[in-house]
Image 1 (cartoon, one colour):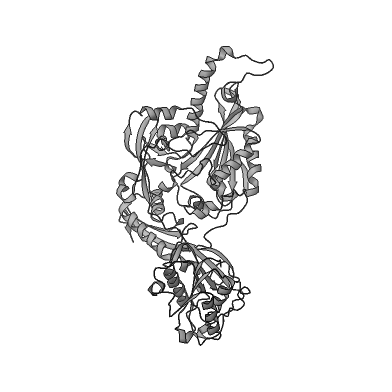
Image 2: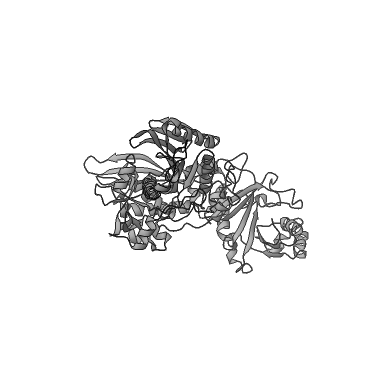
Length: 638
């Protein structure tokens, strides 16, 4: 409880708590309400004295107020409160848990109408009633009041739980147990603090224009991926945990190697040729293929200049990679997803050379940038060759630390990449990749040294190094693969080896800061980023702003035609559920012997650490999913 606050107390009986608060916090504006009328309330022991104490402190008392219908009280209409407090609610008499859940839900729905934007709702419950892990012992969930789920119906999240400070309010006498002048056991009671959740925003399709291989192209980012675009989480000055993990890794590697991070903007799209040439091991089914809306044969002069500029190399000054058109204030249009369904759907990969894909890796862009840099600097080096002299006893170095073709540094590039993956708790469809590459003499065993250094940095957080054919894998539980180190021969010179490091910054951020879910990294809630404003060191656990969110399970069954694309099914799930589905499990299949149709039954688990997800909201998302599947994938819901 804080001073200088407008506090509304509901469900008061003998007003002993109101009197205690009035005495403890003289600058607090107290409005105390009671369900009973004044003459009935005065029958409680000590009520008259407590009422006088509240009035003498400048507090206001209102009788005959139903806490589930606060907006109907004329004295409360048009007012806002910073705190709404309900101590040890109870329906009265020997009521069961279902009635008390209903009381809580209706109270929450009522009080948010009077709650300020950054206000709090305080609900004190006896130990065990709330049904959260904070209760000791914890009741079975179905036998509890399910306080978190009831609050979520009013778009509230549980932000804090701590012991009810009964010693602090020594004059407080809790009454009303079974509608008697008898108190509850408040000694082990718990105070639950609820705050507002951000609302779920409707999914939108993003129309983007950028330069790809000297062509100006326009295309749509699908609704389920659009929220990952243009977030700038890696921008210079960012305190986002993904940026902090990148800085931590670069600093740790810089002890052994020089590192230059490029700030050159690279497009989100790759051509099919680029993908095949640089990433032959990536399956086409794992890629997000894109149909272009428009394609112009030649870029304008401004864009060409922007593409051809030299990369700026700076270990500290890296910014999140954005398409050139966005960096130069060209058009990026947002439209409602429903208006662009046909244009924004993922397409099947084909063999045509004109197809494009959202980059599944930064490797093609890294190779192009390094090739261009070597060509540009080789030209400059040739012009000045006549003025260069070699110092006896030392090898003459070429451009950018190249000595006889071998670099003395690692080149780096980081940015967003995309994968067409099934819904999974540890398989994000978009994440930030940190890519490092260098050429070293093979006798230095650079791949082994880089792997060992990464293991030294990350082993305290549960990452281990596993040897595979042609490279090393960085593994952590429970998410699995978080990075790779691999090598390839450098041209005809078998004495040199090209070593590449690829790291999933998002999953590493989950590990290093003990996040419960990678989806938190994309939260728009300011409370998430506020946790990192003081730049906590890796290893300091994140303190969730939404505690003990409930999970909800729904099944869905439908008939499909002769072909069925499960990846498209998962993409539709992400969009319809606003990313709240964390697990999809195939329960049953049945193929009709006479018809070319197959029935599928899936179980979906809804769960959110970023928003207040209620049973009502999850069911609404599930109904939306049925509509989306019927209209987009032409299935028949069973």
